[in-house]
Length: 124
Length: 314
Image 1 (cartoon, rainbow over the protein chains, first blue to last red):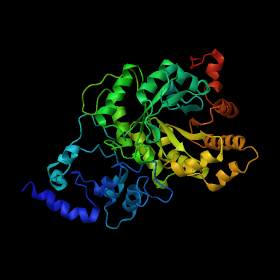
Image 2: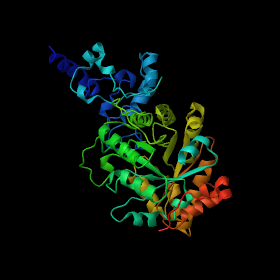
Image 3: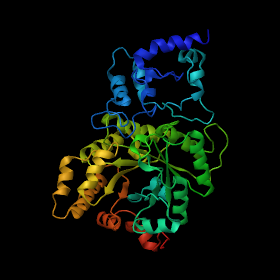
Image 4: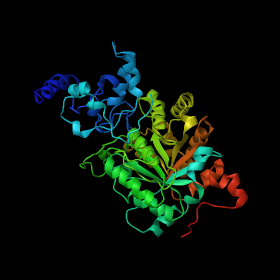
């Protein structure tokens, strides 16, 4: 069973969000736009290299993930207000040990909210 | 100390980019900065700018300190993971360096080794938080760190890149995470800078952090075209390039352009100073700060005592 859940999650989320299975999903707080699809895997907003047309510094053919995320967080229908507000929150560093695991399981167990002891974050 | 200037803001602060070294000695570095250092409060020890390998941020920061120039040591997220970044901070601290500036960093594709592995284990705002944590005495893991003094944590933001209405919010996020100094990306779009500054005044970032817009001293229109085409996140309007290209004295016009941009930036509410990148190497930094009457040469307290922070003269 432990091996099945990540497969199911990936089968569902890969086609819709190009899910990278980081195991600590933050889609709800990023306008349902996966920040791990950013070539720099930035989880806290766009880098300074965004092009004039809103496209990616690294992949000129791709719209910046954070241009999309910021827009969608404000405009996507049906998003709860609390999710919309979270787009500006400081998300902690990725826990690389969760790569490939099911974020659904990690959400239920609370494992995805475990941060390093020295992480202070920001009060929101 | 830069930290005191950032906290008290008695006058406009001036910082500058330290030229990158590819060989040479500390004495050579001293010669290269001799026409910049006396006119600025601190210099950025850059971390492989534009994804090109150069003398490291840590070595450059130590060299600057040895030359009597206060360093602001940049750390980019592109090349090192969280362990290596924290080790560089701890190493710098061994030498009494306490000024650090967190950047996401240009992508490897902006450099001359685009086939390199990119790291980005942390992002810019996360690195700000980690630096602030070390300043408070803990590594990210929670283990104890003993900072040699109060840290000055800085960050950067691009006021003119999309999504424009997100930039001030992101600046505030970095301030919330612990940054008290923000150096902005070079900007040739005065209206966008004005909008950004107004937004940082509204959201409180400009009150809680010293914000320094940046200008870049160049000699000709070709350099402006290069920045427009090659430097990620910088847009130079065609009319601006044409103005320099079509001038009777392009080098002088390039300087006048920068002076105009700087004067406009310094006039904006919330601006605490100026960051300068100098590609002219002809004394233009001195001319700029004297004509704008900013920086240490126009510090009433320094003028009164005759003290200069810069001690090195080859």
